[in-house]
Length: 482
Image 1 (cartoon, rainbow, N blue to C red):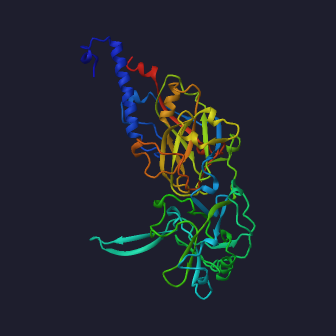
Image 2: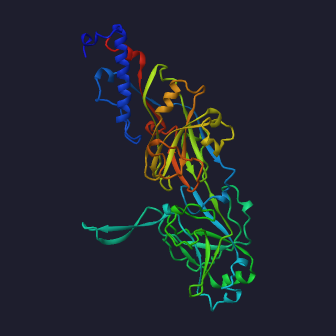
Image 3: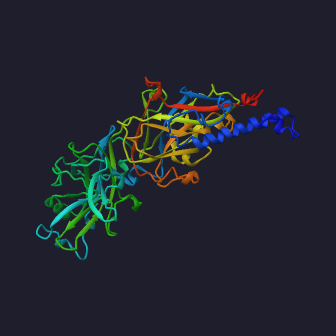
């Protein structure tokens, strides 16, 4: 539009130009939001080629790799101890090795219908230890094929990528374990008889609900003693690599489990089959995962030079504070993206979501390297920005988070002290529809996952965690047309 066409306005000519320049800036920001796409899109000059060249020339890109501070924060929850987690783990992968123990009180197994006299070798058909995998660890999925008119043609089982062939070993503990003795990690398995008490340890079991055949003679000894017996469950060396999760005594969400009958007990239980419908089920008295091996998580900037970790289950969350000194004070932020590179060969676990938040210096720089889980829901310590959903630890390579709001807040001096960016896991499914509802980032704590990111000093600068910013300089925009 020519000046002569807008001269009827009562404002001075210079002011009219500034108004149009500001409107152009707003247009740039709007277009940037519309064409920016998901934060997983390749980095590009936002809106390039879609707006007037004169305005395009004011967009500047800045990649920041200089880091003021890093923290690998262990997140503790005093209200949920290790033995109270809803998941039991078996297997090994990514430097993690896990077994679990469970106590069974055999003084509670007898009923009016099944008194002690029925527990004989002749009357008992089989004795099995029953476990139930959570759905994300199912090794195979049922795939149905239909024809054009909706008729079922075939039903097949296809691998999901989870460990398929698992060889289970069940051992009797020297004495029942004490919950109070299992409060930290890593820790050694309790003393036990090395001979397995299940007869099927030489056969792989790929199912969602493994039933492990227990030695009947050993079981009858437990019956005769009528006391509490502790069992250790492990996966043998021939098992497929990976960590597999099973329902513990503390399971709470039926939606995380396969569809089963209402009478089914998901936690570890012993099933006694008498050859008729009047069987007996004895649930575990208590249970807990024994994390025999856990890799150290980089906690400081020096340690994170070779790599850093985001871990759920046993929570450890990374936080990075960037040096923003190269960003002009008069910058108008169009878009900002934090990019990290995931080592998919080392990462593992079920699909999940990751939240990116601002974290205060006081919370991030704590000398102990620890943070209470309550801080995650305290906006005065951790201020949520946005999230990435459906991340697959062993698949997603370059992971980008939209931190535009955080950088805008930094430029506008919303916070008195510079803040870092915290990456934290989210368990909720169906979270924030269109960003309207933030999730509960403190509960539930179901699944163990580990994403291993390439380090702050990676030989290839493109692999280092990078803050990418696209901005305009306000003074330069005010000069447009002069």
